[in-house]
Every structure is written in C-alpha cells, then in structure tokens.
Image 1 (cartoon, one colour):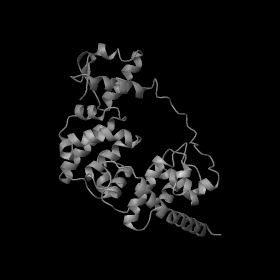
Image 2 (cartoon, helix red, strand yellow):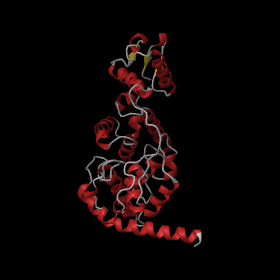
Image 3 (cartoon, one colour):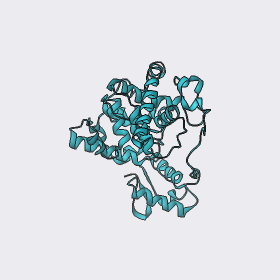
Image 4 (cartoon, one colour):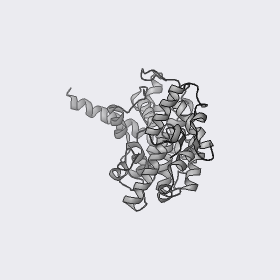
Length: 307
C-alpha cells in the first residue's frame, strides 16, 4: 500500500474517533467546567491573555488569586504599561518564572503603542507581541475571539494521545505527530472547535491526569483506545533526569526575589543578601543571573534592588 494511502487511512481514523468524542465531551464540559473568572465571557481579551500566561506550568487554582490582583490593579493593557518593573515583579509573587511578569509589562506597552491599547485578534499580531508564543496566541483566539484554531498544551496532548492513538504522552515539546493529531481532531465547525479546545484541556487537567487518571469518571471511557489497551505505559515520561528544586539556582533566585518583595523599600544591602543563602558563590551567581534577566539592579557596594 502506498504511503499516501496509509496516511489517508490514518487521517480518517483520527477524525472518526475525535468526532465520536465530541458529543460526550461537550456534555461533560457543560456539567463540569470549573467556573473561573476568565471563562464564559466574564472578562476581556486582556483578562484571558493574562490568565493564559500565568497558567503556563502552573495550576489554574493557584493562578486565581494572582489573576484577581492583577486585574484589579491593571484591568487594561495601558494600566500595566504604566507600572514599574518592581511593581509587576512584586505582584507576580511566587508564581514562578518571574521573567514572564516583565514580558507581560512589555507586551502591554507594545499593545498600547501598536494596537491602541486593544489586544489584537490575529495570530500574526499576537505572536509578534513580547512573550506571546503559539500556545498563548492560539488560546486567546479560541477562548476569547472564538476563532477556529488548534490549541496545543500538555493536557490536550495527553488526552488526544491516549484516547485517539492509545499511547501515553511522554511530555516535553510537542512532536510533529502530536501536532498532526491535534489539527486533525479539531472539529470543522467554529463553535464546536472552541468547546473542543476548552473541554479537552479541562479533561486533561482534572480527569485524564498524568499519573492517576480518573477513567471511571471520564466521558470518553467507552471509546478510549488507551483504556481499552490496558493503559500501556501509564505515567511514563521521556528519559530525562529530573532535577530536584531544593538547592538549585532557581530556589536561590526565588529566595532573593522574595526577600526584595518583602522589604518595604525593595532594596537589600549585600550583607543582608548574604544571610539568604550560605553558599555565597552560588548566591553571587544567582544575583548575576537575576541582573542579566532584568529582575534586579545591582547598586553601590553590591546592594541589590528591584528595578
């Protein structure tokens, strides 16, 4: 059989299986979707964008209080554009990857300069904004602007890999095959595509979880290829050593920023900084990297401050 014929068969199988999943998945979404303030038309395109940036590698439940604070202080891009770096770093708190806070501020400034303070509604314009990649742009276009576009995150990849292909998703960056499956699975109808993206992501976050999927509660269980095959390789990940957080530069950087956020002046003398971590060589390395990332400024006698 010719290769293109095999590919045609694979394409039809994926579309057939995904099509069969839509109705039960949609019904499940209607009954079980968590009621976050950035869902169901309750916020602006800016609010959706903020939520998507914050929730990357962070559970939505943990994002909620930070999102509420940001939206109360900076409800529009113009508001955040006027904020100081110190203010946004402080408000970012312990969300992790604090560079995202500064990129959001840069994003807001660009929206004000190029788009009259309004979040743009095309993929090309969104991905041209600082800190906005394929996932965030696609999510904003689907969830707020209700456009038909494939959204691919870890949860969606896991649900599709399991239910459609019958294999475990190994994490890491999306593979060519995973992108192909996601594109084929997306319903042709625009309204249905929005529900599909939201529901599939929610299912992966709450039911089809990485280590302990709740298959008995899953709306796809009757036709899930992964479940039928006995859940082969459940929880398997790509063979890559996982570094413990304790003792890492990431931990030390976080401690430094926490100390700066807690100080009313957002400044620390070097003698006070040295009390944060016993390994001063590692401490200095982290100070240098924070300075390079624009998250702190180094002053006289090695004192540090939020920018």
